[in-house]
Image 1 (cartoon, rainbow, N blue to C red):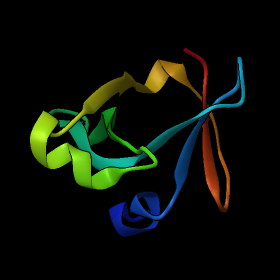
Image 2: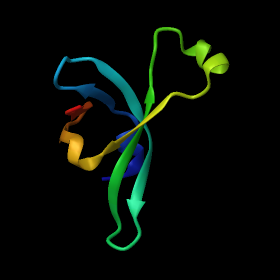
Image 3: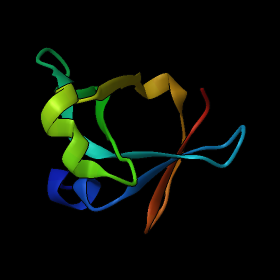
Image 4: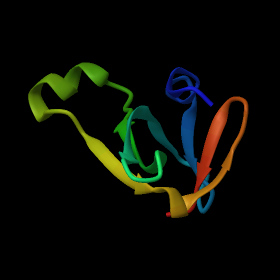
Length: 77
């Protein structure tokens, strides 16, 4: 799977169905060349407010990922 295909996907919390945002970046383990964490850019209704509040990011471990589908990534938080 390419990183560009992960960037297009919304990240959804399976506990309450809320949209957390979208994948902004990944962290990789250099030894095994595998993804260890997803960096999620939180989305909001007024994205322009991010200019005043800074970039709101959340780091999720791959152990929190339940499923990666065609359109969404389901996570358990």
